[in-house]
Image 1 (cartoon, one colour):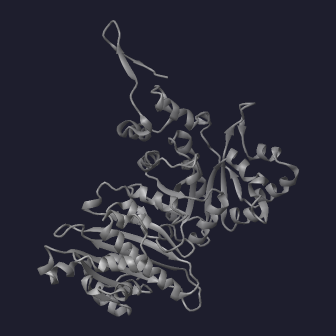
Image 2: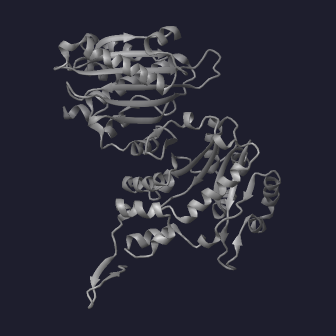
Amino acid sequence: MEELFQKKLSTQEKALRINLTKAVYGSFAEIGAGQEVAANFFKVGGASGTIAKTISAYDMKFSDAIYGSGGRYVSEDRLKRMLDHEYALLPERLSHRIEQTRFFAFADTVEALNFERTNQGQGWMGVRFQSNPCCEPNECVIHVKMFDTDSLQQQYALGVLGVNMIYGCMLLHDPGQILSSLMDGLTSRRIEIDMFRISGPDFKKVDNRLMALKLVKNGFTKAAMFGPDGTVMQPSEALYKKNVLVLRGRFRPVTHVNVDMLLTSLRHFKKEPDVERANIVVLTELTLNDLSPDGKIDETDFLHRADIICSLGQTVLVSNYFEYYRLVDYLSKITKGKKTAIIMGIYALQKVFEEKTYDNIRGGILESFASLFGNNIKLYIYPALNNVSNSLFTLKDFEDQLPLNLKNLFRYLMDNQKMEDIKGANTNNLHIISDNVLAMIRNRESGWEKFVPHKVEEAIKDQKLFDYEPPIEIQSSSNSKLPIDVG
């Protein structure tokens, strides 16, 4: 079987392999545009070895009668109902096959491009499956966006994706392989997978936060999300029409400065006249660039940072939007015009105003600023210490240092409340630099604890994050233990 995983098989080859695997047997339930998955298994022959049943509950009344009434039909909740119903029928009606068969139930609920081409094609796919007969099932769920401009092409792409998903779940065992095989025969110009979750008795050790990172790393999506409890989230659903406040950082580790940036900005954000307090979502963002400055991503280091951020109750966005204006453009499409704010250190703002940053953009700095400072977007600027005078470095000082050709642009943004100094920042912490704190932790120096929140300290020590080891102790002549800092 080893050669089976060495080369990429075509959609037809994958479907045929499954059809010829006698132990694999299951059902297909497809709502909306996702009518092509089961068809691939019929077309290659031998489908009687795989397919127990196919169903397309296209009419809403029929769908409700089978799966129960609910809210939206293209949603994870509807997908779960479909999987619950269809999988339960397999051992119930096929009890004579239980000991020899690995059952699966595949379901999808999809909205394709409408006739007027006014919507975004998107949907949910899931497989509930056994790795061995008589075992408790596992489950894999994904959310997809479709970019083909023809509905038939969208359906074809969904058919390919569905076969890849079933093949991966039934014939591959490594979650990374399952994920990476999903896009076989497809490109990110046609399909985007922005959520992937795999769970069950055979995947207890899988950290789906790492799977979220792999989605971005592999180019399957530009952004993925997970919550404070580590549960992966679908960004478009979690952020739809929300007031979003974002702090980008390396968080290596989270320091008092990071926390103060969030808290002080949040106080400002809540006072904005067009922000609903109950509608606010706060995001801490990690970019691939900050995770891989040398081109390689240390997955352990990523999980350490994720553990730290989650310990503070924060939601994490992992993105491949190096430029701020691309991040804002992405969020604006989801929030649908709701107020969005970016928290930024003033030295990061210097990079934003460097014209050479936009040499590869036809419209240069003006084109990028059209997105960055578009409708209902605001930047909260956190001060820094002036290394020369030891005074606060704020937007007023920033303006004084700008080239003449950018001063009017800066003034326009300030006059229109597109940027604002963060008032009330804890200036006593501005000397804290996360790189220095990280070096202290790794060098087993004492004293780093006072630079981070207590929960962060606990997480680092309890979970041995960032290679933490307690300071070495020796016995003094009086038999008392003295810590020794190791440089």
